[in-house]
Length: 445
Image 1 (cartoon, rainbow, N blue to C red):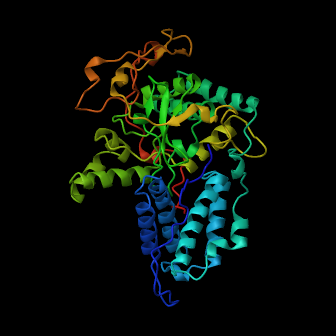
Image 2 (image 1 turned 90 degrees about the horizontal axis):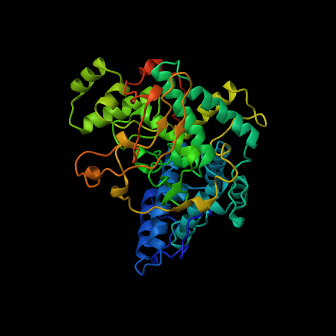
């Protein structure tokens, strides 16, 4: 799957302008509105240009926000080649840190360049600053023409197995308190998903600079079908196959996490200020005044309020996930080429095969079952760490068409016995005791 935005009509000319005077100035946001409207109108025959407009809109809006934030620039005629060099450098930095692939950075720059070319032909700009050779040279190297994913080199199988063994053994220890055990199962599920599925970090975790990438939720997972629904690089929903080595740790983690609602992220952030902001915002939306909200916060932590009132917290960010992997690698004594394992580097060489992806289809409620019946079996013996065996899920007829109340996040059945008896539904530790460092960086382009 190549990382590009398909545009059957790359640059439809704007409406003919009788006056192309150089003195005319236009706000960048207004120019983007006109461009997108023109693109959408061009789709009246169903050629697909409208889909391009929908995908390009988020790129251009973020570009405009970035210009205003970083350069205090809102007028399009003030846009110069130096701004585009700065934008290319920002994309390069995002690629280096793993937020974007190199091909994604090239795609975003190409979308902006096409928009600016349209502006030139419409007389809004005299020349296209995005054609600056230095700006183009700043972008990360990409083999986009071959359609090959430009992920960084993967870890060796030995290194990956060593990390997996470390997190698995920690997760299966039984002589730890519930909060610590939940943390260990979370880390095990995170590593297993990245190692044994084609899911990319930006599809699994939250990307702060992209308001569409808010992180995968339990509603996206269908254990019965063995898939997870993600927002792919093409900006379309895709169903990705979850192999057994990824499903089992995720399912076990779900039991102890015991999410109160289906829209709960798979990996909620533990950044207390972020959780508090979300809780306060939702409480305001629900009609609570500030005095009531403050009273609630005096009686409970933000994490506890989120659970009690089914307010889904933000997902962990891609940067937060990297910090978790960095810590795990350090604790496991792992070092690969002087760097820690990144979300893209952890993947098994064969796990990223696009054969495991397909365009998402409407969900089938009849194939989903409640959280109380997810398929997981653990050893009844309390002498050892126990084991997990996948068994077929059962459909619960009474919930097939339930119109009230969201089904549990697992979508298939669970039978738990022995040391795993019952979900650990205790509240999360208080924010002031949460030690996980998750970066809440300013939004990028």
